[in-house]
Amino acid sequence: MSETIYFTDNLFSSGITTIYSDEKVAIGNLDLKSAFTSNLAILDLEGNQICEGKFKTFSNKWVISKNGEEIGELKQKFTFLKKAFAYTSYKYGLVSIESEAFSKEYHLYQSDEVIADFQKVSGFFQSSSFQLINHSKRFTNAELITIVMGIHMITKRNATAANSGH
Image (tube, rainbow, N blue to C red; front, side, top):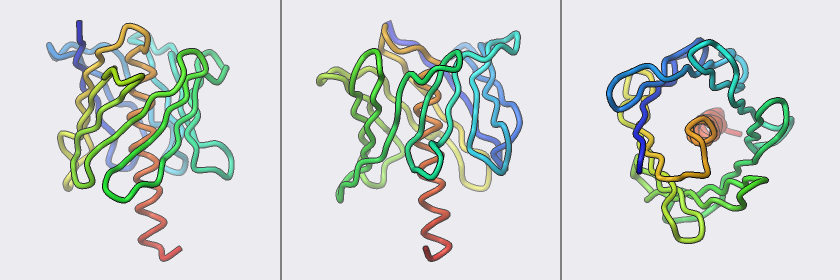
């Protein structure tokens, strides 16, 4: 059975935002640690950290940790006609993430099976909001949210680098 959740980035990428179920019930929080770093954490309703994501030092690879231990790594794959990323879960293996070139919709695959879908549902002159549909029994919502936010952070970092002329 699939589960749909919604979450939002903050305009300045700092602070805490609520993660909602499809029924608009709060199920956790997204803690965007600082406007000056890309570090973030997924928190339960009591404020306990479930999952964490951040860039590796001097790298464009996004690392996901749970209980202080790395559980996976996300990196962008370079293609011409689509957006592609690869997430390596140290427990479950490779997850391919793809989107058409100008689409806001992404699909996460593992061995040709769709494990999740997400899309950016807003973002022009406001904070980016996402809808995530988790089809997987293996991957937690927290890990998938951290993957989605990693893709978002990599994309923002690439846009900043392109706009700065470097």
